[in-house]
Image (cartoon, rainbow, N blue to C red; front, side, top):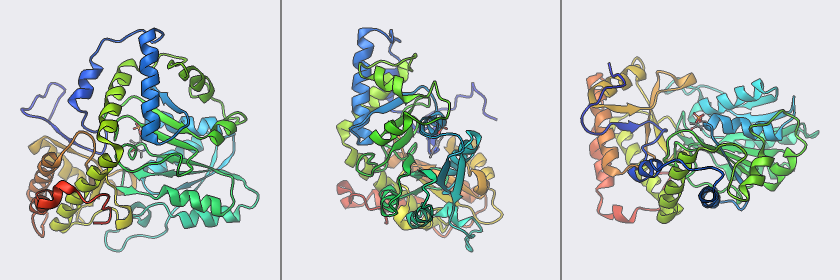
Amino acid sequence: MPTLDHHPSGRHFLQIPGPSPVPDRVLRAMSLPTIDHRGPEFGELGLQVLAGLKQVFRTRHPVVVYPASGTGAWEAALANTMSPGDAVLMFETGHFATLWKKMAERLGLAPEFLALPGTCPETGLPLAWRHGVRADMIGERLRADSAHRIKAVCVVHNETSTGVTSDIAAVRRAIDDAGHPALLMVDSISGLASAEYRHDEWGVDVTVSGSQKGLMLPPGISFNALSPKAQAVAKTAKLPKSFWAWDEIVEMNQAGYWPYTPNTNLLYGLHESLQILLDQGLDSVFARHQHWAVGVRRAVRAWGLPIQCADPAVYSPVLTGVVTPPGVDADALRRLIHERFDLSLGTGLGRVKGRMFRMGHLGDSNELTLLAMLAGVEMGLKLAGVPLAGSGVAAAMEHFGAPQAAERAPLQAAA
Ligand SMILES: *Cc1c(COP(=O)(O)O)cnc(C)c1O
């Protein structure tokens, strides 16, 4: 039984899809002394961080930073733009979409939860939890709302509970084609800085994100990227808000400061991680995640196990969900792998609890780290008595070791 003073030798393999492994450079940056958050050096740090964030969100408009986990930034998105009783259209893609919808209910909104109906005959899992957002269903629902009662469409970009990355540009087109004025709000807490994301170009009104996934930071800060329309709507929206209110924060951010004490040392870390990401170039960061994801999926296919995401067009570059055979408790398997190999895998959440586990391929990682993860999983599957069609590790080695791997076929999502 591991305890807090349990120190096994070597590095722990943190392969959950967030918090992700933090680069040593970022950890070192965070160890610098905490400074006066009203002093001159801080303003400089604030301005640099806010400018770098705009590049990562691909926006020219304000990005608000909160000293809170991603859940806080979900609340901020709704509290700033909605009024009591407002109808919001949300789409069930998995656990995180479900939690955001529950939050909307608790805040006194009237969410409508669209979902792909039915059950997958192969795995017995809900089809909605194996597929992405269906822009056509959203468009159809909005066309029926001729009174424009729906005030926002809320979707999850990278559904971390299933390993599905939905097409956000298609959702925007569906809203526009329906001629509907609803805001588009997107949770890209686990997509940002790992999967391609374009806040301005995709016409997103509020993007919600967090620190501990693609940005490779510890948990503790989160974000709202805004559109001019969202800022305008916020001026008349009636849900109570104070801590989360955008106006004062955006105002003070112009000089690099915050109305209350920001998370100074996490901002040092953010400064460093933005530098790492922007030096490498976002396109090469995205291509690297796609390359990793292809290797991991080859392994799952070689084992002969189903990949949770059933639609190759929306495979996540961030994580891969694996469905365990009937009768094999995925959480017991995860426990065994943790105890034997000091490797942490993501648990099945909500409606797929016990039926699947998740392998993260994000954060400070590389091909050999992922091969070690796959080796730990493969040994664990054998120890748990799961019959395997073949070696996933060998299949991933074929991919990572291929002579042409250096060129890394860019953005080969469907492979
Ligand atoms: C991690 C995550 C959240 C929750 O963020 P917290 O930091 O745990 O509050 C919400 N949505 C998605 C898609 C996530 O991956």
